[in-house]
Length: 171
Image 1 (cartoon, rainbow, N blue to C red):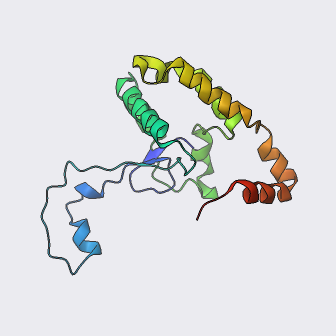
Image 2 (image 1 turned 30 degrees about the vertical axis):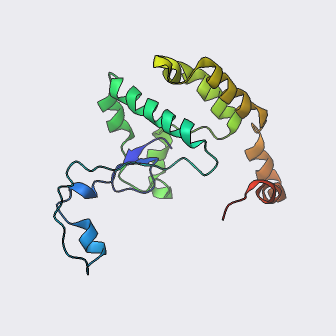
């Protein structure tokens, strides 16, 4: 779900507001440390919760930077921010009505390639990503041929186990 929030861990982009809460958060979690009054009013963090260990970190950071620039240049940015702000746990069934109005991330590499093709002008603007790079990313995503994978593993759960065994090499 494409949404953001401040204190909510179920959102895609989290902007925790703890630094401006007027409390020394470091002292709260490290009570034996001497207090260190540092002005943190300009120290803001942002959590991007969609990336995983398989991401190309350079393309990821460049893409995030493009997204930030795009958001700052949007004419209706504040209206979009209001529409996509979430202060509830969107994973609870009771909050399904909110989830239903949010846009969703692509659910496969094939769908990601299609979305990137639709949005490529945003990434190519100002020469941040070249057309050749976008073409390469789209081709690589399409090469996985996973447009029906979700349905396939739902119909045959053993296929999920096979995929995890073959491709999940973390930890």
